Image (cartoon, rainbow, N blue to C red; front, side, top):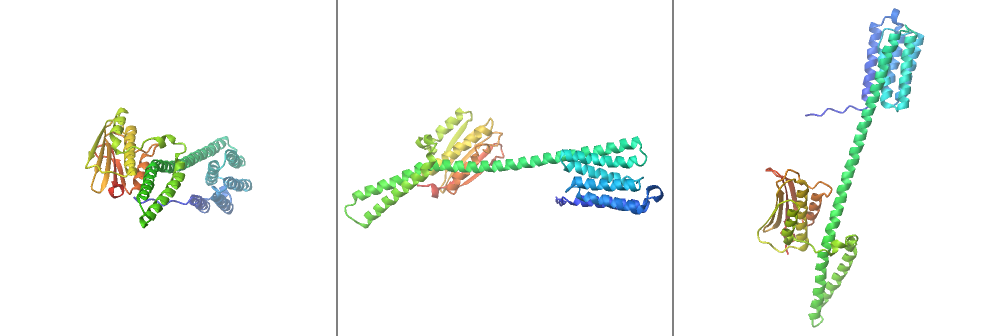
Length: 382
């Protein structure tokens, strides 16, 4: 469906002023009776100026109404207009604009000036109480409707501002979740990397002790030891900062896929039945990959426990020739997407991206939710 072009904000004022101006000129030069309604040139000029005053109805509502009222008052005093509703209609439009665009005090001032100007014209013509009541009702109605439109616009503006703030807050939370998850991953991988570098240093030292004479191999081993010690020192200095405020995690043993049965048991105790299957021949994985795989399963089961409702879950760990595959699914009625405060999928993607893997998630055709993760074994195999 083709969208309608958006009308520029100022165009309605031009169109309205033009329409009323043309209607006024047609009335004056086609149907105006000079003997009863006054000279045509005076009426035509006054109506033209009053219509032109509406061009500033949005940018300067109160001055626009003031100019229209002044023209109408002078016209009423010079030669009383009669038999035409167009001056009255132009006054109502101007009063509406003041009520819609101005603050309360200025809007009340504009409404009072408009009403007084119209009643001045009645006072110099027939001074009929019915006309006072008739015109007063419509002026007040135009003012009230204008204030109603102002309230609606203010409410819409508040909604837009709240939407923008919520969107900004959502983006900030997402960025914070990514930063927090990256920090958590770094904390967990710190022990893994530190251990491996320490092993390199220890093995190079042992190899040097077994070298009986100075050789190229000995110099290479000393270089390995020196470089490894420097790397270990710098890594502890930089990544060790992540330990602050998280000493318990630093002392806790790192989990792996070998602990899935224990994880499943804890989730069952929390109320979510879980079935764990391992397909293919298990191969040794790098500690970081093993840890990340465990955390992904843990986060997916936590999401299912929170969002799936009454359900059963299934975890499949599939060792293929080229990749490690994880599939965590449930048959519940919720989304299980982890879009709450924990931003579970954000953390999964951060972990998987480190090893060049892929995360897929979504609702299952038969009901429930599934998360599939693939990690290449060329980066995970040891």
